[in-house]
Image (cartoon, rainbow, N blue to C red; front, top):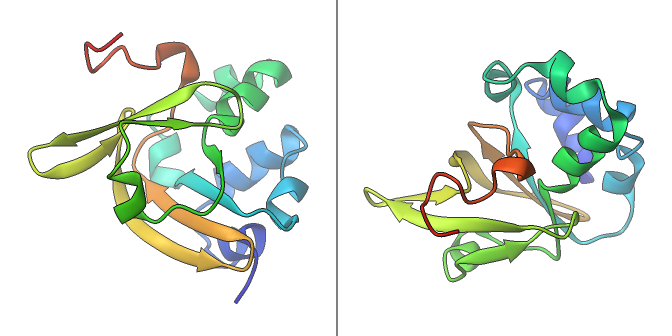
Length: 140
């Protein structure tokens, strides 16, 4: 079993995520013991945002990427029991059920519960943007 960073690298469908993690000096964090839960937008998810815009300001990029990280190892079943998850950037992700499918902030799962030595990865179909946290659910 590999750590989160090596698992993402080996998969091949996280090139944009990996490059942004390196730009933000967060890649090595995903090698540390953790445990972490990472909501990992795949390359298709990054096509829905303007990457140049989110990478233009390093502080903004760090905020966005840490909004995809939760301390501790949480399976999809464990996540389903919460309405909010506190992220590493200090903001909460909203957890909802929409037409029987779990929705985390503005994303749906592509794949869940990828076990790693230092945590777990859930592949998502959208990039979380903390500045829009909660806007789509009418709860805030």
